[in-house]
Picture 1 (cartoon, rainbow, N blue to C red):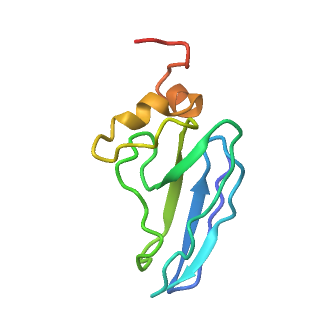
Picture 2: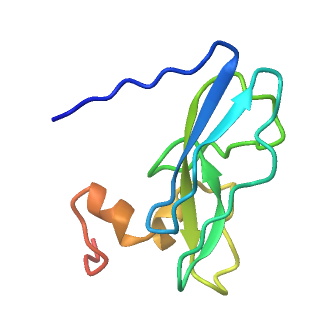
Length: 115
């Protein structure tokens, strides 16, 4: 296992994106006092990008691209099926119903599992 250190100048933050099966999104360098700008876009055939979250798998903490960035972040995409109507943010568990095999495999399940 090789580990690499990453340094950034003081007052600068890095936002990394994990697209969970979508197209890659380059990291963003954000200066202290600034926001992250426009929402990052990723594409994945057969899916619609719902939003970016700071927590993978549970998707309870949506990232606010308009808020001032005060720390480094890794953001994760939540995908939905077209025509599904999007995610009901009042029920975080609904993310698991439509999330892709990438996340399901993290807990040892496949899309063919019914339990």
